[in-house]
Amino acid sequence: PGYAAYGLTKRGIPQMTSSLVKELEEGVQGREKKATPGKVMVHTLSPGMVFTKLLLDDSTPELRKFPFGVLAAQPEEVAADLVPKILNTEKQGSSVEFLTLGKILWAFFRRFVLRQKSKYVDDNGNIIKYVDDN
Image 1 (cartoon, helix red, strand yellow):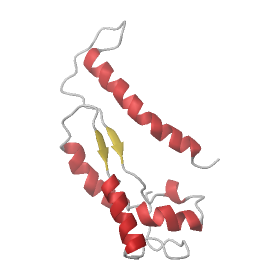
Image 2: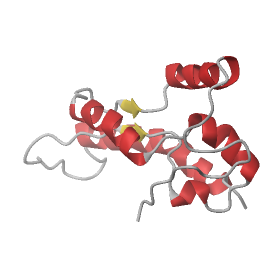
Image 3: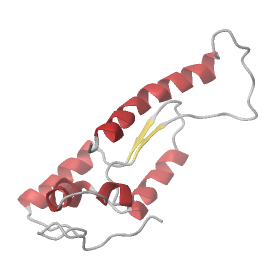
């Protein structure tokens, strides 16, 4: 067992979001639709790779070098990016993402073309900076 169950559950989130949006807008078949005090919004939140205990537990130096050292971010960085996006999202069922394709390509360019080293993982896969999420 590695990340299979984790990956599987992440792939199910967009479907769950679509189903919840439909239930909120149309109600549940066979049940009375109830009014809510205010508008209930449902979105898919995708933070990408975040340096947390979950990500790092049982990881290997190779995984920490790549992809973690190239693509993962600190929780504070992800939150600072996502919170304003969440608060400004008006379309029901939207996907709110931190690790966008543009960020992935820029991270790859910085690491593999410009040869910039990770701020968080050294060349041997050791963690340089990690904020405990407890």
